Each structure stands twice: as structure tokens, then as C-alpha cells.
Amino acid sequence: MHIPFIKNIFSSKPRYTHLSRSLNRFLYYYINQRSSFSTTARMSSSSTQKYKLIYFVPVKNLDATKAAIFAAGAGRYPGPGNYTECAWVALGTGQYKPGSGAKPHIGKVGELEKVEEARVETLVIGAELTRKVVAALKSAHPYEEPAYDVIKVEDF
Image (cartoon, rainbow, N blue to C red; front, side, top):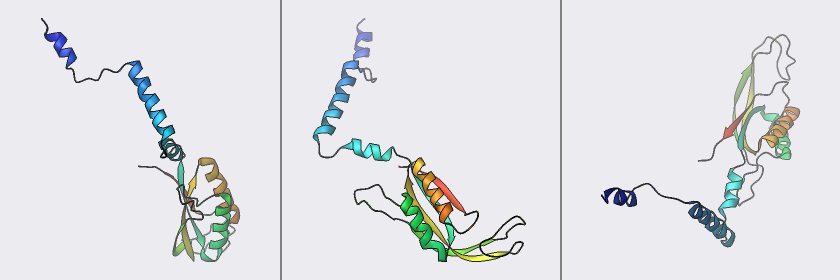
């Protein structure tokens, strides 16, 4: 007759009350406010979406495009070191064949063109800033249609 009562006492399911949840929230808030290490600052920086901008540019225009995107806010790494103008650059050969309606910066319509280009990768924080950085890239880039990718970066 006492078995159901004993079974409920030793149940593996936790029995939380509103009071225990409120107490947990209070303790979490109190500890974060009193400690020198606050997880709330880390949570706020990780809640801002990060984007990776990758673009290709002729080598002779590399510095001009980097200056434009950095001035717009790209390349800032969100950490304690306050790093700015961060980028990764690799050299390679790009190719394209301009169509009949094109006005190519380099090459001629209908002819395959090969150009020494740089691939640039950089970090941008926030969607609105990413839009501004892409606009700055387009205005500084010599091609009428610059090749670029914007990739959403996830934190793990």
C-alpha cells in the first residue's frame, strides 16, 4: 500500500517549482554581477551574427579595395585584443569571357581573359554593417560585376 508513495519519492524526474526556478535565476544574476568574469558580455558578443566576406580582385587594385572595406567596418575581430584590418589574402589566376553587353575593365568582349587576382577573406559583424561593407567593395572594385560571397559564420 505504501509502494506508490515510495515510488514517487525516488522518481528520477526532477521536481522543480516556481520558487526554485526563481532562485536559480537570482543566483545566476547575482554571481554574474559580483564576479569579475561576466558571461553576459560573452553572450552578447556571440549573439551578434558574424559574416565572412570573400572577394576576388586584380592584384593592382587589392590595396584600394581593402582600404574601402576596412573603412566601412570590415576586418574587426571581436575579442579582447581589439584587432582591426584582419584579412587573409591568397594569389591566383581568375578568368572570364565578357559577353556582348559587357564593358570589361580588363580584356575584350568575346575573348577569354586571364587575370592575376587576389582572393580576400575578412570578417564582418552584423547584417547591416555587412551591407555597408559590400556597398563599399562594389564602389571601390574595378570590375562592373565583382565576384564576392557573403557566408554566415556560426559559433561552436
